[in-house]
Image 1 (tube, helix red, strand yellow):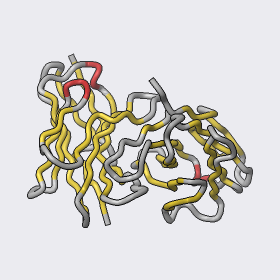
Image 2: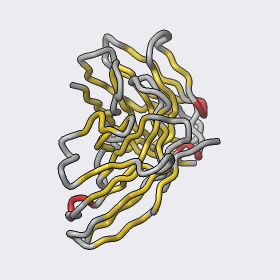
Image 3: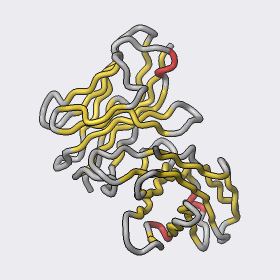
Length: 114
Length: 115
């Protein structure tokens, strides 16, 4: 079975500050991990993903995440927040094999204030 | 850039009525999915579909739900007799290949409101 826990349903940062969105997962198989972003009235857009190999993955819009197996974590960071980063962020996990569904966390709403 | 489209963007229906939500996946994708998000809750997997067959479904996807690929481009989700608790945002997604590492591309969603 797989599950995802996102700590903090709401995160607020100042423009230019570090963004840190937390994600912990549980998986009985080697996990594939994803971060998706959802802007208002839009669908989910992939920010980045970890499958195998390098544990620090870089995504779009300056975001990156580090897979830490020992901590079962996949936290999302961005060094300097921009107003346009305000959105809802979802961490998701899937596993090895075919037809794999995504298991999502509850989401974290990021607010960026001037 | 290719994208997944969904129609309608918002559907209002009476309890007990049938609804069909439509999706046009990205043209060269072979794997299709439906997810839903009840207001204030997490995105939940409903069903995956490949080669004209359901490949996996969740416990939510009961006999009231069905999926179909009626032609070469559309992928539909039908709810036969809607209930109040079916009110949610429904997302369609598609991927080029199977395997959990492959990106699923999501549509903008259909907001279903059951009165």
